[in-house]
Length: 444
Length: 145
Image (cartoon, rainbow over all chains, first blue to last red; front, side):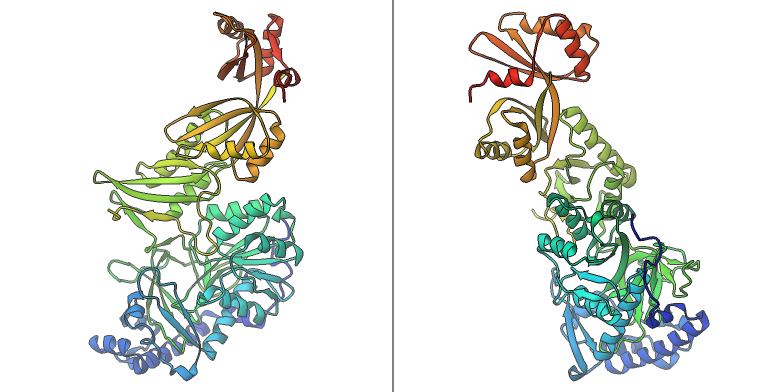
């Protein structure tokens, strides 16, 4: 791999200094901001005031960071229930931008930003880029979708604030993406990991090899992806594949980022205070223990989020990172409780299937999980695209490949599955978040 | 002394066979002979064509999964025991037959296509026993274009 060892060419950026605050300074800042944001939310957001009152809780009761545990949670349904503007803490004339989720499952959610919020967003994106070794000399191809989705504009303004050159290409039109990547000597790509896998594949069909491009860093997010997928991307494209974390309800991309050690994501906790809870009991989990990530926006003005339950499963890493950043890390998020499905009583995450597939030599990460119910019994079929590299002209060899995939998946999940080899390009390619599961169990 | 055979992966569903066949037809490629292996879930279409390189290019361009395999073509008289004689020779050569298929000409000759695990050893033994192993040119010359 080329040029990816250290912070290749990245220069120091003053905004990144906040990543290295001494812990006592950081905690003092967090407490001050927590008290202010709780007061703001209590005074201006009815839903939060009602819930705090019900617990007999007042903003003055927040005297230490630990007191955050007394505060009520906020969940996604709260944003839907108060659609569109019920969670706003700023009057509309102070709101300078609105974003919205796709709303595929009912009403969309709306998020709002004051100018100050946008500045915070840009600053955490700058810090994210810096952590990935990206600097002002870089040419960034931003293939996140521009529009209501927060990915596009979030990465865009961060890249501009960094002083890098941004190509606002948005998602889609893969052939043009590859042409631009090559002709404009792009050094950094921002998109979903699944879309980048598609780009690698398409480039090859066009007779191009991304390994020969100047591209050296990918900032990939907006969907959970496995460590095996990272290895695949890094090997197939020769770039450094960095994980970025964020969600619209909190701010968008830039809540957390991997540093050069690629060992957990640093949370910009001067703005987003992380907790891990047991998702069943709501009780806090000790550091190092897996649970649901809960985030509180410490500085958000337009929509302060108090203890927002992300549905993302991770753990806070107790050890200090060798990179020197003092802001804490969480494990990479490979699982969302939303993505989880239950089959024959077993909890399954698509990322587990992905890891199993990538463990079988020669399979590409293009797969689709189809759940059906036959005579009352749940069935799981995994469709996997076949590649020329593993295609043999004998039936036995293909059945053997199928059997190896079945075994790899069953080893991880402990349930029997059916694997179907399909022709390449039959599984729909996503320009944004990949759809991995089709659940037909309730269709009849 | 070996022929290039193309193998094409097919999902086992209606209409799948048409895809590669139409691509070859449009490209003006003649299928000399073929066999189709099928399982419940997928099939493998094995083809010997007039121009295997062009065929491979055409198929891959449209995302077919294609594999090129070296097979051995043997010409025998079309009479009872023709195949049995050849297989007896192969048994003595200590090689395995992965699969085979055959077709006949009007001239009373039959052509057997073999996929061996060790084609070179098989060819050597067959030729030593006086069996006519067809080279690519000899094979293609049997088909007037």
